[in-house]
Length: 424
Image (tube, rainbow, N blue to C red):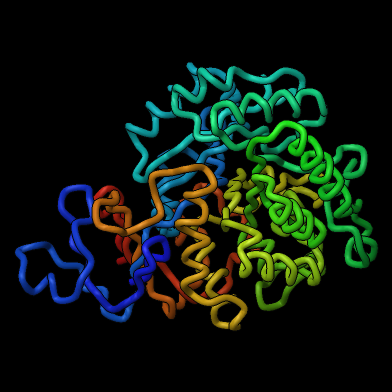
């Protein structure tokens, strides 16, 4: 059992009564009449927490539903997911926010927490009513998918969020620099004739937002960090005492823009739209910087940016295809590769999947300490399996790992004391 939030790491039992963890100890199961899950040889952790999930509700049932998305989350070990607001309609008012929570209460199998939009209609022009949305349950605000391009609006938003103690999760992209870019700036994009998306398109708006943060105070959360320069900016800002947190995705921590050229092991041809993601896969040097940042705690959390797409939106020429990977079920096997290669130790990885993200948005999650809500992940780090469409609960099958043999799989997920996923 590994629970970084309480510093507990030992071979032990966890006792759950109703929806709470009652005790962590050894030998308890032999002395109670409890239902027993034999996890010998497995790893038991708090349920994972995802700060960045696209459940596509409301508006896009062909891509994902709350039911299919939360089933996928449970299969990936995530017992709390934070859904993004770029839906149809946008989650920019209390009525839509309540609609999401009503649907989640009916069909969701894990805890769904909703982010509200920063600006009305994701327009970047006028901020939403943060106070009312916070009172109705919004855990943070974000215009994910679009930057808050207007400096005055960003200043107003940071000030308003500061008063409520909420984070602004920012999608950092300078439209004038990114333009029509679809692939990381560099040799791979040029050889394939793909429009380039340079790292300066990310780092320059991060610099701008940190400048505004110095003026306003508040909490800036940098979503899906992809570039070494951004890691360094976050590091310096934290040393300066600014309240900045950051997340990185499993794919940006493991995959590079070399995937654009195709991969024989993954049976992925060059220029395949399954290698197109926002922000794009970066250079190997950027990947190394992200891993270092995650290990050092500069990056607080792994967040999946699970972005299921309908097959028709992906089966197009690379430039026209939709961005995004389905990733919530594949995060664990990817990330365990960092442990196996000695780039990250297992307790640190578990912390970045549990207590770390829970702190970012002040969520009731991420620990197995007695008295905590009984959200539990159990996984087999050595279980090998083939990624196939039929093995994924998500409606989206858009992953470059289709057909690959991966290692590490969740065997059980428990949400509020209820077993919601068991690997057959």
